[in-house]
Length: 183
Length: 262
Image (cartoon, rainbow over all chains, first blue to last red; front, top):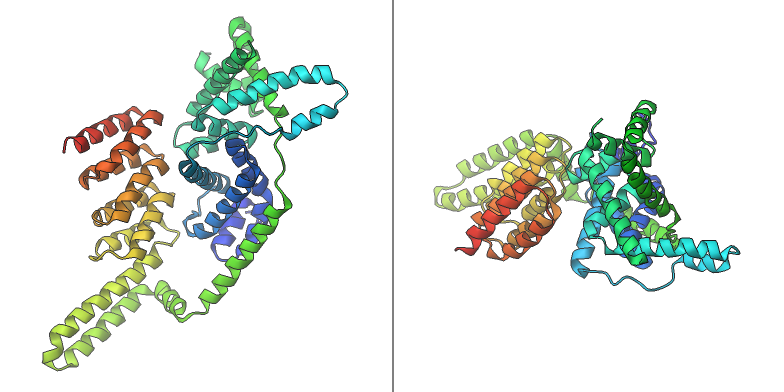
């Protein structure tokens, strides 16, 4: 077994070598941040939630199983952290601030082409925000964080086929919804 | 090829996880179904568009906070590990059977040698010390990697008559965090013994949101009916709206009906 694999590192953390968590943090903190940002649209909150995930990894390290998969386990913790946060705040007021990509856009030379694309992107982003939390979470995991279907299926306790069908349906819903916005 | 199978392959293709032979089979299917090809091509466009959604980078503060948190954790663990109680707990954890046997033997000899007027007092002290020992053992075993040992710990908790905050907390954590379904089910059963404790009641309601396994959700719904927790009806109604499993939905309906008819 490769000693630098996520699983081996987590087993070491479990056995008390908590400094090994540093490497796992380097590998996963940006992905968790991306996941939380996608769910909350708030950078500061996302940073807090990333901190919570690593706190929970330390607190519940004894529950990590020898047969476990770190990515599945850690993203499951991240989902629970987000659920707790969402439950406390119930719903998010999506920020109206300009995203960095919109600022970048102002500086591009090829403005017209980019504007066309940005319209479509804007509608897609709006449509994403209108999705239910569960559906947005699924797209976040599969599309943005690139967690494999099989692993997401394990997290959600359903079959891999069911996940693929769900993602396909959400994609269809998103497309229909942003085309409506475009009218 | 059926459309369902083709759809799965299409999703594999989007994430780049498709084999060469599957891709060929998918291509043949799409050639025979031009309408589906057009529809899925449009969805592919949406899928690709996600690449243009940019996410900000976290601040450098996030890394600094993590390092601070890890350092604080290490310091507190070092402090804890040098304390006497941990030494005892580690010893018990290594050979708990021997530990329990010698304690019981020692207490029994002590009790037997004492004058008779103190006997009833000593019996109750002996019993309370055995309970404390059981609690300590339960809290040690519940952290073991083997699911069998964790189940043994959870069963041990059922034998402790008085509700102890630490024991209950360990059971709730196990209920929500253990990755083994059997351990989670055993901890739910053990928690039922403390059904009159408010923290346990609210933890069971919260567990409806945390758990994802259909078996667990059904068992929790049953447990809430057993302890007659009427305030769980709202959480059940909410869960019903999001859950897709019909079996769970039926169970929630049944539980809501039973709780509201009381």
